[in-house]
Length: 121
Length: 121
Image (tube, rainbow over all chains, first blue to last red; front, top):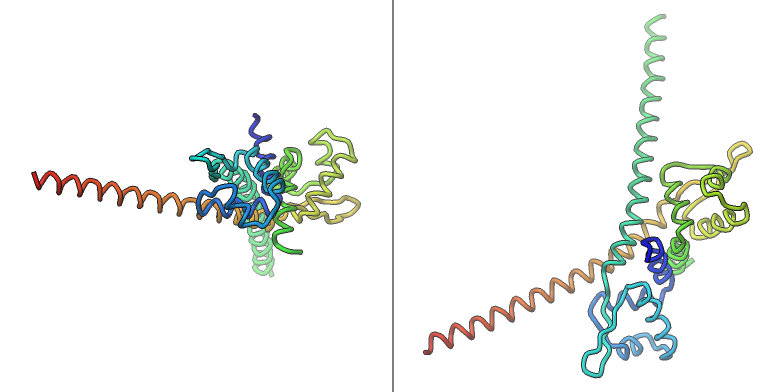
């Protein structure tokens, strides 16, 4: 799978408040499908659909433990999503810094022009 | 608009490689719609649709400058998305730390049991 496709799947999975809530729940500890269903007062097919989307994005895994299926958060795709967002922020901040420098240089040059005009009087 | 709805819009907007590329382009500086269209070799309706989604999520703004419409990145929604992801990571790391402590305590108690058994011999 291309990295961009995985990122798209991760962001699409995060684009739903219920799925984000499920991830929040799992970030505090693993849970069975039944426990998640109880927490969210949701029909079994609805919860199953959300879990499928989260699993497809690699954000959770299911492991069979005795007769229960345990859900765990997978942190790596979250880290990739984070890295992408932070990269844009970094570029944007660099750009704002460059604008600041440009404005400061312009201000300095205007004030120097002014000073030399004052001196010529 | 509820914060969760905005977050959903932001994540949905990020769930497309072309829209992420447009944001990357804009994080390095503002651009006109025409410049973005040239960079992406895309039909005007296609680019317009992507820009609409990004604008709807508050990730970009358009300002009319002379006859050109200039596109700018808006960093705030990106920061909100980042904050959400980081919060989950933090909770997850806390949980892993707690598991580590638990395992370390268990290991210590097993080794102490073993020592006291050795001493009794």
